[in-house]
Image (cartoon, rainbow, N blue to C red; front, side, top):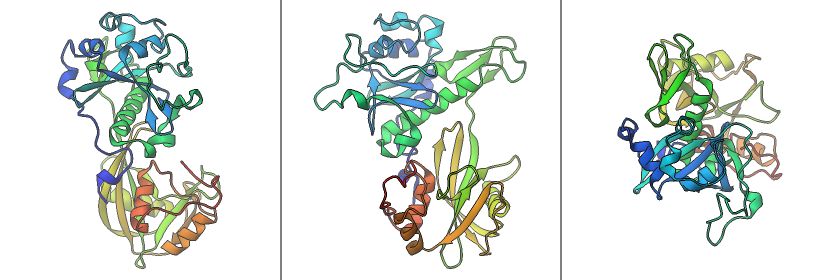
Length: 345
């Protein structure tokens, strides 16, 4: 398995980090009719179908009223002059001569209406989905269905929006911060310190025993029948490999020897990077800790396939690296459950 096979971590737009420090880059992008905008709000992005982002023109995004500043189109460069608007925009990157921006929308903002003169989706051509298909969608719902470019745009937008929402003040002195570098820096208005989006490293592992059985566990926070690979955050001062061994031992009571890197996936819920491994166990008796895990079982390929078909096990969602790790071990896509309600997106 390689990183190109992982959902939410495939090829994406050039982030064009050099543009973030250019004084006129954001204003130029807002004035460019080719620019496309993704609306993001509280961990969700605007979609116009089950696997398609609603990528709007700047005028459409402003017309939606998403910035909270206006409900009718105005010149895009003028819109960029008000600090409230500037702080809501994030430069995501460029691809094929198109600049992509995210517009951060207040939580609980309704999806833009359709069919009105200022409708943000009014210019869609033949094959446009019905009105009922447009709305806010979480990455857990659509991440595995998006193409490479859209998956990268949506993941970045959700992660940066979450950072802004959680870090409005300086962690050093508590003063308010202002947004700079096209949404990628917050500067303290008192001490001048700069603060950047953070990423928390976490390990996730397909644990295999000497017979090549796969260890899956059920978290105490999950409903019955939901099983996934083991995972946990990397602690200060430890390597990724040590984190794998520690987490498996702490949660499942299984000792791990050799650890092999497989790939990584951004996981913006709200700010993680999931680093995937195959871990080879030296012991075969799982002892769930009863806190993190309430159940842990070894599965052969045949046992897992039968359990999934019968709805006895709901595997990881398609948008997750956990699913990619499981299916890499399985040798292909997992079977569909006989009852479609037994799914976990």
